[in-house]
Image 1 (cartoon, rainbow, N blue to C red):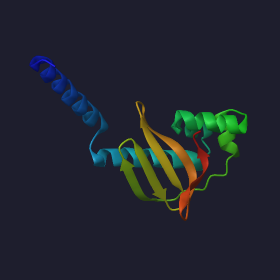
Image 2: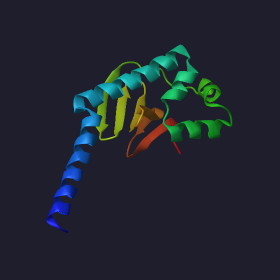
Image 3: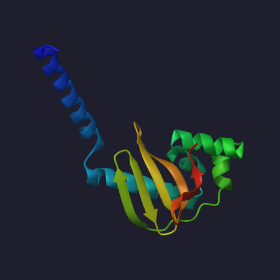
Length: 138
């Protein structure tokens, strides 16, 4: 590759990294965004705002909820028996994935262009196995 082409490629790669990192925020900002989304989800659950719960779901999770219930998301969420989560105990953010451990529930979230979305809820840990989740994507 010619020197000018190589320099342009390196510059473009560096710019891509800066844009990606810059748009993601600091680790503390990402943690705060994840926590806020989890709290919004739980408040909507506590208030029975099923439409808000659906809006907070990741696309594949929303699709799975509707397919499993053979109904619209709002009706399906109204039929779910999700635990009332309580206070946030721990938040782990790994790139575009996050886990929020609450007193009585664990949520998993992923970052999308529009923000953080819930990929799984009503999750309980199991020894030596993955979490068992009431709501999850396909």
